[in-house]
Length: 439
Image 1 (tube, rainbow, N blue to C red):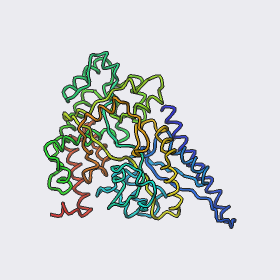
Image 2: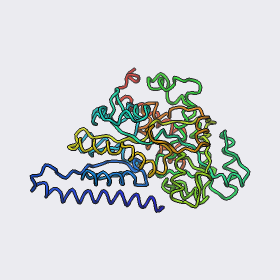
Image 3: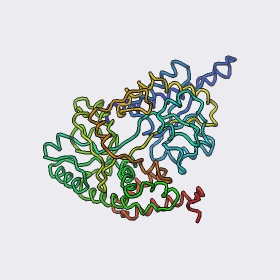
Image 4: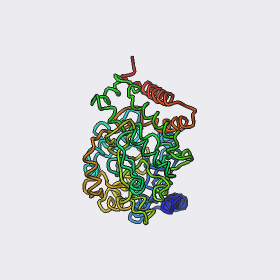
């Protein structure tokens, strides 16, 4: 585990422990005090990937405490447990004051923020968010959350030196991709860093390539949501599952990929242990911060995921967002925290401190894409990622990840993985009494 990640975890634990201790001590003072200025601790529930590993949100929370006296207690859960846990906590009335929830929230399978969270539409900062990001945290034209990262786009990052040394170019088709992997493996280097233990990384190729879905029918997302087209008709899903299984069997993920954690991906790329990994372009900044001798921005190139002969880039309009629990006893204080985070100077601090980001969804803050990156992004055909456009996919992301792991070990076939995905989607739609599934 690298030093930056250790520091972030320590910061999170320190904030949690300090908040817990101080709130306990403060309770006695409150009982004996007639002062109107009571000590307040906001509880902030999130999953691991909901907060930057650099600890920048925790640092901003410390600044907020210095200014207002309001503490923030971060309660961080494993990624694989959070989606179920947050629903249980909301249903039981035991949810934290602030919740980190994946977007978009208007999807039928998302957490019902319009039922459980505070309407923030009247807050000054709402109109300053980029429109697509604002839509991702809104339901029926009411805004319930605040989000910060710019649109998410996942590429294959590749080591330019390794490619050049082996006479390779960025592949554009699956066959070219396989040949690249074969050459790299024969050179004694692991072609691809695939992180299966986190549960989410291996799923990206299936749904970030949704341009394959819309290639022959631009209205296919609407038809899928109306159940006029079946998910199993999206042949690229099965094709990509088979291709990923083929690459795993060929050793292109390495021998120990089932033990790989995303937290170690930066080290694998910086040391040249692996030649490629799926990540956002901003991941290069995180690697460079952790391994300054490896100039990641210069040494790592990017190409679109060629699984299924995909040529476009999937775009997720917003990432994790923060919401205020409607049952919180400290709604006003939570609104204060959101207002604090949305100040221009603190947005700048977030971008500066969150080294894996290239831009925010706040147009007033200048991003840091290189001219080369921006030109490449502008050249690509873009499609909304399937998990943001099609109902009943995003909620089962971790389940799909487990199924894919079972596929890699031979316990499931690619067909089994697709069937399980379809069955869960149908079950969820029926539970939601979705009219498209009523017949």
